[in-house]
Length: 264
Image (tube, rainbow, N blue to C red):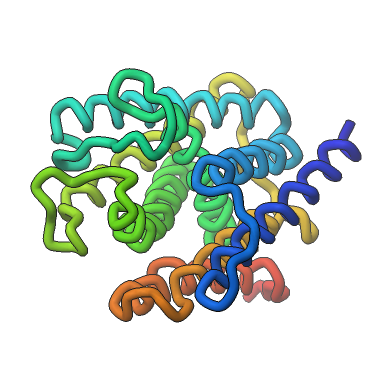
């Protein structure tokens, strides 16, 4: 079973890497790609497969379920009230909706939440994250890592009409309120997973143990994704922002994984 899961993880990693490279190369050449819906489904599948490999089927299913439920509730409340992310609504470009939220959106949250969490785990390797302060630190760092991702993802997505900010905002048309909402939503999901997983499994140790190349695959994907935002054709301010919000944490996380750590 593990061999099949490992093979599937590598296969989806290769497919996802190709899709990211296709996006990076778009400035020079158009390569076949499935569009937003196919990309989100591929990325979500990779996150689920890798999570199943490293966490086990039950734990990654818990992580996925909590992400889908919490993010859907937050999105639905957000669209209806404007209180969480600011006033916005979704267009029809992301497929069918459940009430006001495209079904693809909760999947999109998980596709981003999992690799951002692995990046944060790598950055905090050596830190005792199963103590209360460590749990909070991991949840907060992972939430900030993912929100930094949205800072460079949101402007081009709204430029293509995927969602609409009804009153605009000072950050490339996005209200600053949105990013506080991202930190809140992701922090709640990460903390909820840690607490529920701890209660159900009676775990008293790290959530995730790094080891080998396979463990680093989500960090590689995150870092490769960051390259998409620093290629020609992007707005110069967004390129600079991407360097500090995505490229930097991605490279630091890879460095932590690749270079030997010495104890003082």
